[in-house]
Image (cartoon, rainbow, N blue to C red):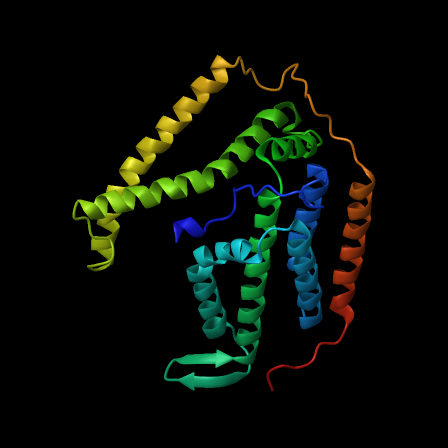
Length: 272
């Protein structure tokens, strides 16, 4: 499961999206995520799906590579679908003893599952098409405009980008620890829930030790390179909006208008 995590990884290609300014990509991703929770019918999800496909094709990243990140959240999707189907009040379409499924529950379950899929794939595209350095610069730009954190914008953006970058590293480390413990006779898939929880200690302890060791090594490396935070720090590569960035900025506004307009289009009744 851990090898399927794509958030935090960078996939270098010479695509249109890779060449965009990181500030535009961050803005587009945030707007796309917000719009996913504004749309409320099938027409909105179709429009969001078309936008996502266009981004996938334009990024030149293999669709299979991007979609493999969904394997890591299948369990979360199943829980979300189950809870919405059985716990949403409304018109009952199936029942057995104390369990019942409502039409509204099925619609909510499908809606939440689609939103989660679009959310994960859209967020993964941001990190897959943006290098850690560019992502840090883009985050720092926006944080500098927030009154309470603007004085620590560089440090906060550096922390967030490092955290994203180390997600796949820690997942890979977890996989190695699990294989090493299984080779020593460790059992993680047998026994009751309490036994499995106790077995996870064999993974968590060395994982925390490894994480702290990596953090200490990173801090030593940054200190050896005279890193002192954002005070007086300059950038070799200045962020300047180009023609393609303005085009995407205009398309972002168009996306807001289109997805908002779908809320007012009557949707067909799927479950009668």
